[in-house]
Image (tube, rainbow, N blue to C red; front, side):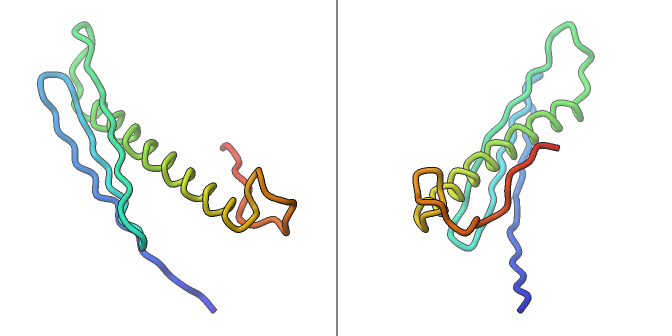
Length: 98
């Protein structure tokens, strides 16, 4: 049986005097995870707002991803599949770096 879930990410960017701030909110079935990120334009750099947006947004989403991974780790441990639990049947997917 196939199950489909849809989680939405709301990302708000604000820029003020060379500083870009991002707030990312992931709405899941169980609640909301919020992450924040900032980017600062150095005075000697060319001001390209898009770069600040990209950096701040990526940092906010990375914060959300870290929090979501901590929740997944906690849930795995609760069913005995975490690092502190007994060897199990191998729940979840292994984490690999690209």
